[in-house]
Length: 270
Image (cartoon, rainbow, N blue to C red; front, side):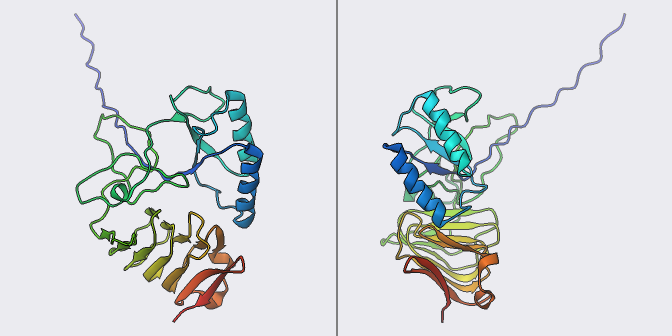
C-alpha cells in the first residue's frame, strides 16, 4: 500500500497598500471644463506625469461611451486614469479603469490622528493624501483597494485654531502631507521624495529637499519659505519650478517662492 506525501501549503500574504491619488471631477459643459484643465496644464506642464488620478464622475454622470471618450481625451493630455469613482460601483468593462467606491471627504480630524488611531479612506475634490505610509495587512487577511488611506499620523502634528498645520517632526521620504485648510509649518526638514501640498503657505524651518506646493486649491497669494532650499520642486497656485530649472544662486539658501504678475519667483530670504 502506498500513501501520497502531504502537500505543504503556504498561506498567501495579502499586503494592503495605500497610495496618493489626485481626483479630477469633470463638470458640464465638458468643453469648458477641459479648457480650464488645459490652462492648468499650460501653466504646469508635466504636473500630472507619474501621478495616479481618480476620475470622479458622480457630478457629470456620463454613459459608458462618454466615459471611454473622456478617459481617452485625458490620456492625450498625459493624464492616466487609474480608477473611476461612480455611485453604485458599476462594472464598466475591461477596456476602462476599475470603479472605486467608499471614498470620504478629507477633514482635519482625518488628517491629524492621535497615536494608535487609524482612519479610513480620505480624499478631496482636488487631491488626496497620506500622512504616513500604510502598514501591511495581517498575513492571510484581505487586501482592500483604497485611495490615500491615512494611517497613524505622528504625534508631532498639531492644528491650532487658525487652521495652520504645525508638524514638529521631520517629514520622511515617501510621505505626503495634504492640508486643505490653511498654512503648513514644518519645524524640521523635508526629505527628498516627500511632498507637501497646502491650501495656504508653506514654512519649512529645516532643509527642504522634497516637493512643496502652496496655494494648492487656487490661492495665488500663498508663499513658500524655507531655511535651506534643496527642493525637487516648488509650486505656487499651479506654477512650478523644478530643481533643474532653478537658478543656482538660490540653491542651498534661505528663499521664498511667490507669484509676481503671474510668474513664479524664487528669491533669497533673510
